[in-house]
Image (cartoon, rainbow, N blue to C red):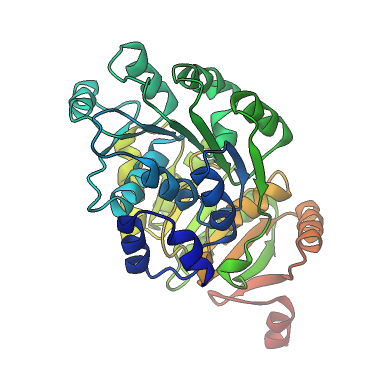
Amino acid sequence: MSEKQSIIATLQPFIQEAWNKSGFENPTSIQKQAIPLILQGKDVIAESPTGTGKTLSYLLPLLHKIDPNKKSVQAVILAPSQELVMQILGEFQKWSEGSGIRGASFIGGANLKRQLEKLKKNPHVVIGTPGRTFELIKQKKLKMHEVKMVVLDEGDQLLIPEHADTVKNIIKTTLSDRQIALFSATLASKTEEAAKDLANDPEVIRVKKDETIGSSNVEHIYFVSEQRDKIKLLEKAARLKGIKALVFVKDIGNLQVLAEKLHYKELQAEKLHSEMNKIERQKALKNFRTGESNLLLATVVAARGLDIKGITHVIHFDFPKDLNQYVHRSGRTGRFGESGTVISFVTDREERELKKFAKELKIPVHKKVFYKGAITDDHAKKEMKS
């Protein structure tokens, strides 16, 4: 019996059917470890890189456990951003098809009256941002006494000071026999400790690299430049044929300035940051997804958990603060065996740091230059000139 059959065959027929339709072969490392534990009712704290199939690691066993004949909310999934909530809802709808299991999303900034209407339809699964979810609980509109499972997706973001108390308060409204599952791409020790306080004797899973996704077809390259000249490199990158790039920028102020400069040069770039409202964010993502614009400038927080198909390049405009962040950002391209390119724009000092990262990750990283609008090796350009 293959790995696929052994884990997936233990799940409800509608899930097996959806798996077969999805074209997935074997479950990924995180799915192989997490699904059986969640099915056994254990609390789980899991770290696994971006793009390794974390959502299905909790969604499949969660769906398996729901009783569609009951009218009560049986599971709550919390996520730090509106985009991630909507993304999880999309996956939920795909994988619950034909099961009779109802789900609903609740996000801050959305019309409260319309959200109350959703609750009247008795969803079995609630997917929400912490603030809005807790607001509905306090108003006694969302009843938690039959909730058997609480999932914290991108758990390290949910347990930062801004959200931690709200998340703890939500968990306190459930009965003590409920199950907790926390998933994150990066799991700092303080997050792990905070999660252990909320959970009951949890199993900790750490997947550092996922072999099941196949050898990564991602090329890591870099360009050296003064900080103030990085914008010129970004303009050249924006003109590359067929590029669809996620560009990481450190802070919102810098991001706004970059977007304006690119627009001035008539280059299509969308922006994504935490101060934008829901409508602006949705529009930016839609334009990027459909290819109307080929660059999405984002801060790290705004891009958490985003799953956008077909990102060809990840560009570190501002250098990542540590190795973890480099890995996490870079994981947005070359997903599930597709090829991709990670570009770092670095100053001389950052170049040394990048080489250190490459050594630790055991990956080659190559210095490049732009020559006549194309990316080429540094030495090749010199040869052409001579």
